[in-house]
Length: 126
Image (cartoon, rainbow, N blue to C red; front, side, top):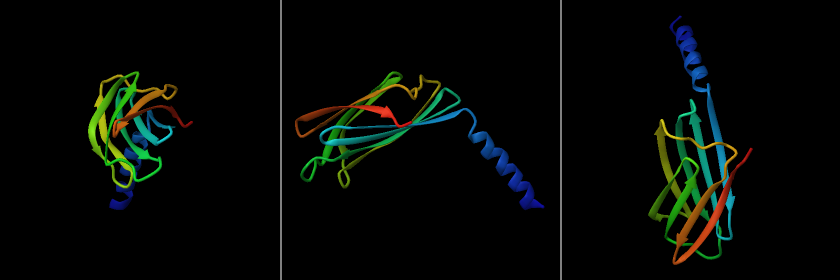
């Protein structure tokens, strides 16, 4: 009986997790970089972001990069990000009560490494 009650409670919890939630998978490429940026929006006001920047150019690739990401709801940037096997992990960030990204917008990314800079435009993979 306890298993049955636990299962019902779990189903209620899981059914609540899917309500009013959107997931956007943004991506873009340039001559030397592929960027993947995933944004989960819950209840229209909670935004969780993760992503990666991958070096696709010739050679070994840089050890560190700097990046800037601009969306209509704000931006983020970081310097001295280490690459592991040509990939930089953008980490995980969250904001609540902030402006959130919409699926139809474009996200601008700037990657700087070894004195070079490339700009990319990310679009949502529908």
